[in-house]
Image (cartoon, rainbow, N blue to C red; front, side, top):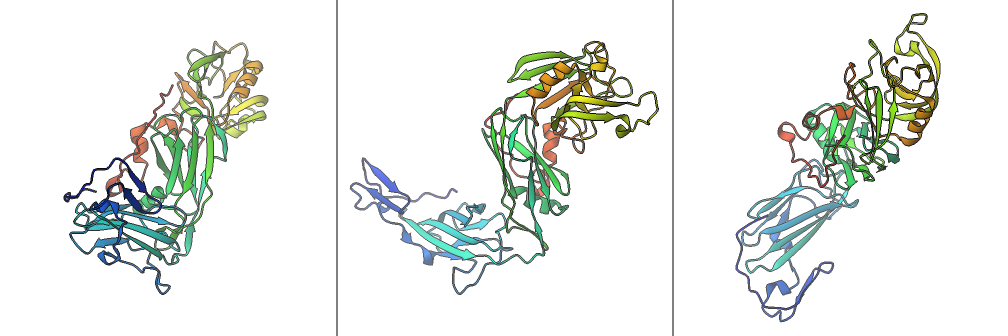
Length: 420
C-alpha cells in the first residue's frame, strides 16, 4: 500500500530492536521518537462491519469483511485476517489507507482474528485487534475434494487430480472452487488446474516436475460458500514425492525405445509398435501401473473372435500406459520383427529380458513418449494421462481463473525443467 508520506521525527541510534511478538519497539536514545512507543490503541479510530465478539452475534460469511479508518489523518497501513486453522483472507487496501476489504469469501462457522495497523500524523503506530465468528452455512450440500494419486513416489509426468463430490458448472463458482485448491511444491514451479469436466480437475506444471520434488495438494474450501445451496467441507490432503527424471522415447520409425534417466541415455531397446490399422498413439503418455502378468484378448479392444486379427495371449512384464489396454510388454512371439518392423496391435513389444528390465526401472508417473507413428495423438483425458499433449497456453485456458472477469495473475516460476 502507498500513501503520501508524513514527516517523522527521527532519532539517531546505533541499535534498533523490534520485538514483534510483544508489539514493542525499543531504541537507544528514544526520547521524542514516535517509533519507540508501544502502538497506541486504535479501537476508536477504526470501524468494522461486523460483530466484535459481543453477545454471541455472528458475522454473515456471505458479506465481505470491511475495515474503515474514521480519521483521514490516521490511515490504515496493514490488515491481516486469519481463521483458527491458519487460512488468511485475501484483501485490498485503498491507496490512501482509508479502507480495506476482503476479496475472497469468508468461511462459515469459523473464528477469525483481524489485526489492523494504523499510524498517526507523526508516524506513530496504532493497532486494533478484532475477533469474531461467522455463522453456520445455510446450504444443504457439501462439496468434498478427493485428491489423487495416493501418497507415494511418482515420476515427473504425474498430474495431481481433484475429484469433486458435487458437479460445479457455473464459471464464477468454479473460480471459487479453484482458488481453494492448493498445490505446493518444493522447488516451486509454475502450474495450473484444468477442468476436465464438472467434477474433475487436473493440475500439472508448465513442464515436467523437477526430479526429487515434493508436492502437497490440499483444500481451503472448508466452510466456504460456493453457491446458495453448496458449501465446501473438509478434505484430506495428499503428499507426493517425485523420483528420478525417467523418460522413455519410442520411435516407431526406427523401431527403438531410448530410455533416459536424469537426461542421460541408460538403455536403447529394439521394439515393435502398431502395424497399419492398429498404429500406436503418438505423444506423451504417463505410466499408470505395472502388471507382471496380463491375459490379453482381442475381444476387449473390439476385434471379433475368429477373425484373422484375433488373439488370446499370456503377457508378462506389462507396463500400462492407457486404460484401453496399451502397454509396453514382453512379446517373444515377435522377436524377429523387433528393431525392424511394426507388427503389434498397438502395444510396444520387446523381448522378455528387455521387458523385465523396463518393468523394473519405471514407476507410475514416468513418461513414455511415442514419436513418428502414423497413429493419432494420445487423447488428453479419459484414457489415462495424456495431459502433456495439451500445449501450455491452451492448458491455461482450462482454468477458471484465467478467463474473463475471474482472470488472475499466473504463478511465478523459480524452476522450469526442460522436457525431452
